Length: 458
Image (cartoon, rainbow, N blue to C red):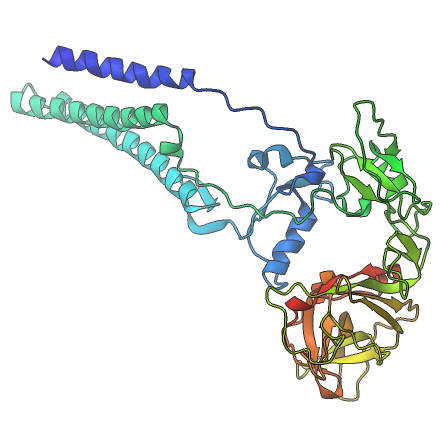
């Protein structure tokens, strides 16, 4: 009977060992360039996003993963961390324990902690079994021929070996059936880098590792911004990164606003060049002629559109023509410098005068605006009430006067509402963070801000 059970067990074990051989290989993954893979982050970009999620407080612990776990995103140029480092980004910190478990103190998730504990338990079991065998050996040696002591020693040795055999055999069987039964590697939650299928502008594509490599191919001049792009295997990516994207204000790059380019490994999705001369910005916001839709270089500090993507349209508009988003353009104070009183913590706003040009299209319910170019920014804060700290600049706008009566909202980067204006130039939001606001250098280059009024709360 025991012989039959042994044979059946041997066959079952052989089945589990051989079975993985017949598993179908997974299909090969399609190669996607890191610049277009939303799972891939650059180190500084990851650190900035994690700081934003933690309300601008530097998060502790490791969040940028540049080990083999980063998979195809892993790429490092040079010997020191810089903008060329690529990996994956965690939304939260790696947990760090007070004491080390098996020589490890940092764990990405509870599954990794349990796996490490399981392997540590096997190590401890091996050590205990070895100690039991050594103790039983001494007991046998010192028995002086006493049969009962020798029997006890044999039992200890057999028990230690059997226990060790069971521990490792169970691990082996589970690992043979499915390695995940012993690895307990929970699915990792990675941050996704915000991007469309293809960024609208070539400058929004992250700088690739080794920017001297050929990466772009021009498909259309600025006169043709609507034709469909076709890609053939003979496309020659002859333009390097710096010939299409202006890297700094000191670089001399010809205007390419409105020209369309193919980027390597981006498929048939083309991006717009948006390089303009100094004091200009590439945009398709033409005030007052909103019927023009082509991209051109414009002299402005801020340009953009205002839309209202409401799930339920507001019913507060009672004056004809105010159904679509409305901007009050009577007040020329459209840019504000925000300063914080170091003693009281109060944030106030000093106006920076700029003319706002507005035109609305009742057919599409879109409002187009541009704020005139400003060149005389002053980042100093002076107050008779005591020392102040400069925080940044925000765009001030009054939307839908009937829905938001007599209230001016402050808009920061990416069209994000960052605060409300009260009387006397006081801001009622005490948690404004600098990363949400504009710097004078950014406004001198020009900014595109598209605003959704549905995200602005009264």
